[in-house]
Image (tube, rainbow, N blue to C red; front, side, top):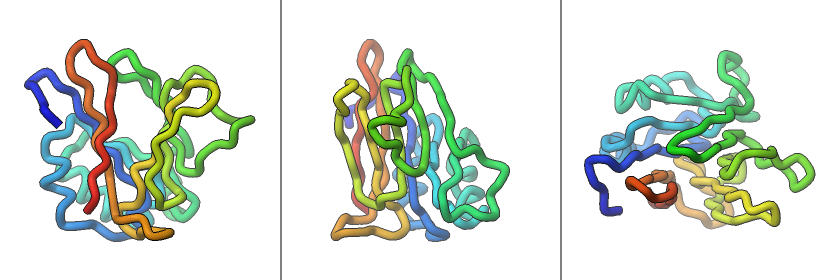
Length: 156
C-alpha cells in the first residue's frame, strides 16, 4: 500500500467474537475510519477500536445479542462509491441494489468477488476466530485521489 497524504483509508474488521488482537492498533493507526461488520460480542472491543479512531461504524451480527443499539445494515457513500454493510452475506436474490460494494462478515473466511450484477462482495475474514483453515485477518480499503477504493487483506 503506497499512500499519499490525500489517500483515504477505511479499516474493515469482522467477527472479533470478544477477542482483540494486539496488532490491530498499529494496523489501524493510519485509517480515517473503522467499520466493524458484526459479531463484536463485547462492547469492550468497540471501546478498544474507538481508542484507535473514534470514527467507528458497526453493524450487528448474529451473535451480538447485547448490542441492540447498532443496526443490522448500513448504506454509506465514501469517495463517490456506495457501500452496503451487513453481517450475514445476502443471497443473489436479496443483493442490495445501488451499492457497488457489499461488505460482510459471518463466514470467518476472506472473500473478494464480483457478483453477476457487478457488485464487489468483500469479507475481511475474522479478526477473532478463523474458520476453515483461513488465517485471522482484517482489511484496509484504500482510495488514492482519482482512483477507486482497493482492498488490502492483512493476515494477523
